[in-house]
Image (cartoon, rainbow, N blue to C red; front, side, top):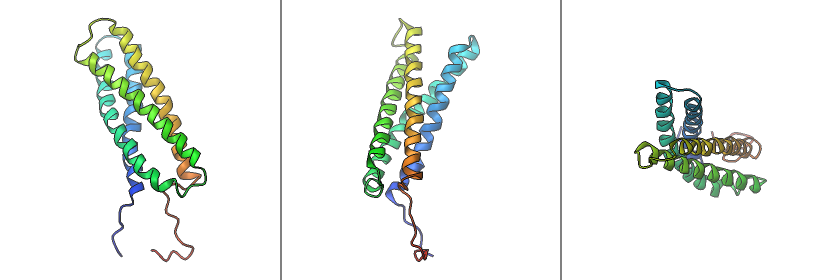
Length: 162
């Protein structure tokens, strides 16, 4: 049996699950930090910040691999508008989380000394809106794969390729 070559469109599902998990958990951690106080609040702030930084970096890898996959998948699906909506929602989500990363970075290195609570709240708001776009984009991506067979290899009826 020959080794299977990596199809370009397969890189996207391999890279997108990291930012999905990291950014959703970052948002949950920041929400927890917003409703508690004391030492535990600092702990959850740090956890949320770390997850946000790593998720914010990996989200752009998922966007890049999504762009690679789009050129292949768009030619094979029945509704390319669905794919475009997925791309638009994904970019909105990536930019919202990038803005949250930038704000959190400014807060983490103490470059801003005024309006700290308001900036933390703004960061959380960006993350919550970004999470909404993340869930919506994930739903659209699932529709592309499971309803339109985007990126799915459909074998011949006699399975001659195997």
